[in-house]
Image (cartoon, rainbow, N blue to C red):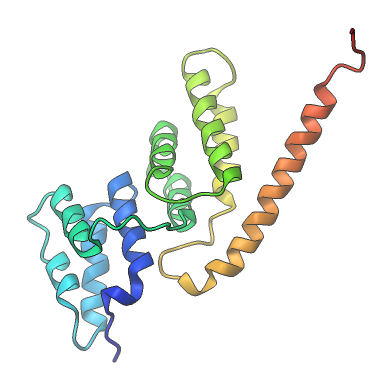
Length: 196
């Protein structure tokens, strides 16, 4: 049997913490995750045992447990696995459109995204606010754009860490395609005449 050491999965710990802070993961889901590690490991680390015994603690206490272990070290973790989780929650109708958009925006502060991803996140948030205040667009438009974006990440999970690099390449290609489409649309919308 294996023994999972927290220091060997720091990136996963940062992701779980970011998921908890942003509301993508519940305290119960984090405790279940720790329980699975304890069940699987021959000699589970005390970090996971303490985490598994946190059911009577608040979410903030559980976040504090992570912070203590991670020494408030801000890791440059990719948020893509959390976008995969957000995709699953939206697809399973566990979240409303507004909840999904708000959690997506909050994730921007908890994990690292590429410039293209951040631009997409800002655009979705802005489109939602415009639709909400009847300025421009509809909730259906926002939902379609959000679903299209999150669909890029549906294969990611916290458990398939070994496949992230391969998936990263596919996501970059998709993001490039979307950017090229957007640039073509903008070019077509330019007036064909100019007045100097």
